Length: 365
Image 1 (cartoon, rainbow, N blue to C red):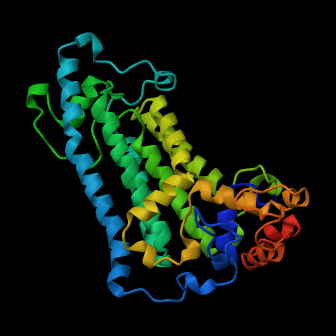
Image 2: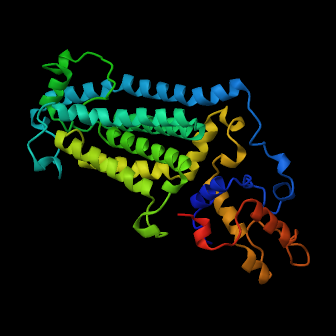
Image 3: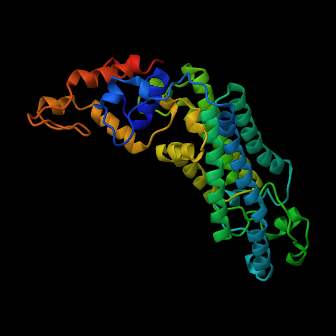
């Protein structure tokens, strides 16, 4: 019960260095999970060089392909917006916005524009360097695959609906160096287009960089994985607070530059938080890489949310046994008791370091 959530369970298992939890369809009472650790891939077994290289290169190739595709296609919605706005002079201004309408800055590109574009890029570069220096393949894969996944979704959103640019029609033409839509010929853009709205890629990339760097630092220095507000169990992690602060900094710069509507930045924060903390997204993005499963030790591989919850229920089955009830994942024999003795479940739990101890020992500050 002290473990709380499935994510906390999996995180503690990795810190404790226990064996891998049983997968879906296999109870914790299964003898292969309790008595025989040799059936799992040995954490010390050295994978082949080709698979190790493939595990590192595959997510990088996917990220490059996804981002090049996004940049290549970004011209089309921008050109459609220019034609639409040029034929409707009354629609050439930006949409009403709660924050952007508070000031008159952002009528033209300034140094603020360059800062707003540079900060997310520096954050992404810092994340890649941190993963490479610490040789953290798991976070490297998660970082690049998550970024690729979200940038493809962003492409779909931008191509589906074109919102009027938050720059306004005049600044958009100046940004592209043209005087009319007829002069707008196809060009490749590394920073998107004037109508890259819907949700802010600037804020998302700022947050994913901060979040993944936080994961690297937490694994390198476990003392950093602490909660704010005097260690309250319901308080956010220090990493999460820093990520939100980074997002707010980028949002403030974008508001001054009028680089995005407020709703774009708000949606980017929500989408980022839900994507980073989703166990199923982490699981599938891990398994998309065909090489990584033979490189990353079994105990470190992510699990589905449903699998983690099932394991928590099995570990909390003591009360049901005392009342003669069947707990989730535990089959009862004809006599009404569990098919395997209670000591086997306890032995498995001890091996995974999930013993009933005071909370302070489960979460060392």
